[in-house]
Amino acid sequence: MEEVCEAAGISRRTFFNYFPTKEDAIIGHADDDVPADIIDEFVAGGSDSPSGEISPTLFRDLVRLSLQLSEHMSASEEETRQLIAVVKKEPQLILRIMGVTEQREAQFARDVARREGVPADHPVVQMAVVLLGTIARKSSMAYFSDGNTRPYQELLMENISAASLLFSQPFNTLETTAAEGHQ
Image (cartoon, rainbow, N blue to C red; front, side, top):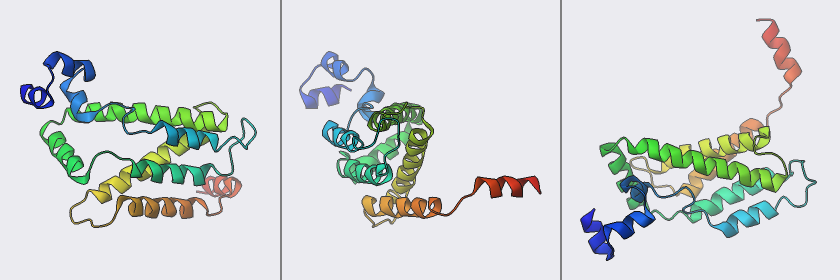
C-alpha cells in the first residue's frame, strides 16, 4: 500500500479518500467506465415511442450501446489478465466484483426503464439486463481464454447474433402448453 501511495505521490489518507478499501482500488467503482454521454444518447433513443411502450428499436440500440461501451473499456487486455491473476490469489475479491456487477446491472435496468418509460422491474427491462449481461460474460470468457486472437467486439456480435437467431424463432405458448400437458 505504501508503495502505491508513494508512486502516486499521495498519502495513505488521501488514497482512502478515493478508495474506501484496498479491494475498491483493485476492483473500482460501479460507475467507472460508463460514459454518461453514451448512456444519455441511448436513453434519448427511446423518445419516439409512447411512454410505457417498448421501443421497436430497443434491441438494436442495446446492441449499439454494448458495442460503444466495449470500445470504452478502460482496462487493457494485460490489465484484465492481471486482475484475473489477483482474483485467483485473493478469491474474496469475487464477492466484491459480484457486488459491483449487481450495482451496474441495477443502474443499467434503471437506464433502460427510463428510456422506455416503464418501471425497472418491467419484464422486458429485466430480460434485457439478464440477456446482455450473460452475452457480455460469455464474450469476455472467450476473449480472455488462452489462445484467443479475436477482438472482443467480434465475439460480442457473434453471441448477440446467436441470441437474436434463437429468439427470432416462432414461439406459440398455446402449442407449448398443449405439448406439456400430453407428457
